[in-house]
Image 1 (cartoon, rainbow, N blue to C red):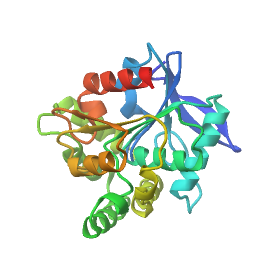
Image 2 (cartoon, one colour):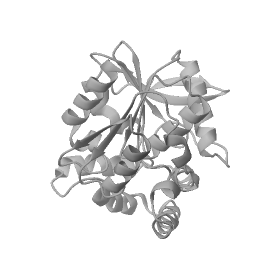
Image 3 (cartoon, one colour):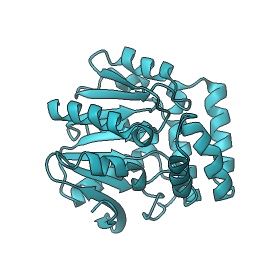
Image 4 (tube, one colour):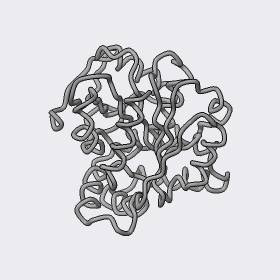
Length: 266
């Protein structure tokens, strides 16, 4: 089941996803340059307790590119329509990096839909979490990379998402996924990350929330995790040791244990 791609008809188009297991729905939202393949450790490791659903967002993986412009709100509305199409009303929503930005926007627009939120290595939008000179430079770099050679982009980003101790096999797996990125999707998700500022929203999130960070995350450093924790005093902050930005791939057992425990009690 983990490797099977399923097609959903959404608003006259199609989106592709993977799923495994039965039980309360757990929806996984990947970051940019990723797709549902990045969630294989969670599809396998959490499917004994949950119906685990990992989509390929519009412009990622096997899902087609959306029409431009396509904002963070457009992605959130699309997510709602996707969940309707597959019969999911009130899921646990787990978003990593850009997926966490999307999860926040989904909550803002549909506050009654999420049963809980897991925000992993994410941002209150780049604009909301990073210094202006940092996010503007990051956006310019990403927009240039979106027109670059896939192999070069993969080699560049693999260095920033894992720790130095990550295995060659893990790095190769991620590089292979990145090498198939959609230029349109990468550009749109980069713009989405940069345009968003959810700082005013964080204190109003009223569902159980887990903040889950790798202790060596270099793209969304621990000071961003502390920003979230200060803005959301009722949220739980869990830090995964020896993990970078993609803690779900680098330390899947620890990541899954935190998600399992939290979602079973939420």
